[in-house]
Length: 193
Image (cartoon, rainbow, N blue to C red; front, side):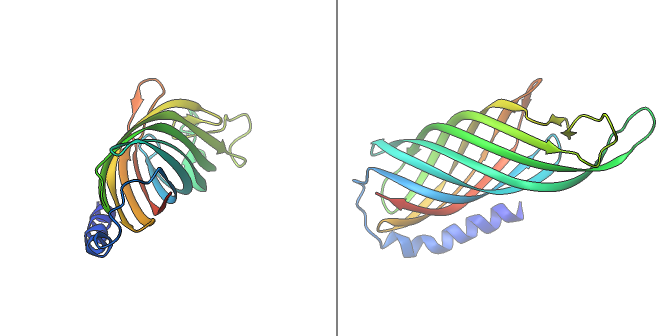
């Protein structure tokens, strides 16, 4: 929650500087890169990574966006929880996200927006130090799992001419024996074209 509060204060602090920028809303789209934070609820794991996004305006208030992001492999400690007792092991875990959908936005140098995206989420697990015969898994996720995903979110963009900063937060929901809600935060620079 402190990170969300910090992000909100940062965006409010820089908004007046960007509000003096160009009010040209005739741009055709945006390209951006971002750092992301993904809180995987089932495994109680915090994942960090990088991504890219491309959006094309179909109306001044509607854009179609596609994004892909990769959360770097991180080493987590867990245990098998088997009938023979807990056997601790290390699990290298990574996440790949691919999402596409509409973005509904205001116009001007400071824009509020909402996104509704669908796509996939893919998990990778490597448990080389796990007991012999143990399946590569971590927090209920098995290596190579790919699931359908739905991402409702929203945020703010602030532009000074063609360059801006975007902050976004949402709930990346994937389905595997039911829906799993996971918080996702993205922050990074944006270029309008």
